[in-house]
Amino acid sequence: PVVELDVQETVPVVQVWPNPVSDKLFILAETAAGVLTVFDTNGRLVIQQALVENGIQSVETESWKTGGYEILISDVSGFYRTARILKN
Image (cartoon, rainbow, N blue to C red; front, side, top):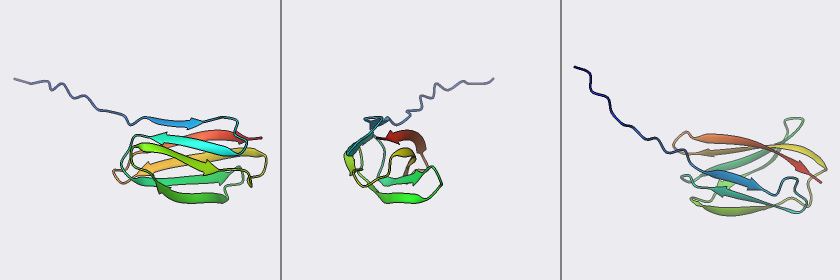
């Protein structure tokens, strides 16, 4: 006989706000410790920094040029999430 297992996989919560951003970006990542990486629309690395485990982190964006950015949030377990934001 086949036994079915009720497996409930929890997907970590990741939130990025405000969008569009002007001077400060906030990231809530309910994940293990990891890395926050931001690229501009040309694929150039803007920042890469350690990600706070299960907490809210802020990133200063005043010096960023106006335009679009790709955010990559990854943790040590292999989980990753991407988001796109606009800088005013």
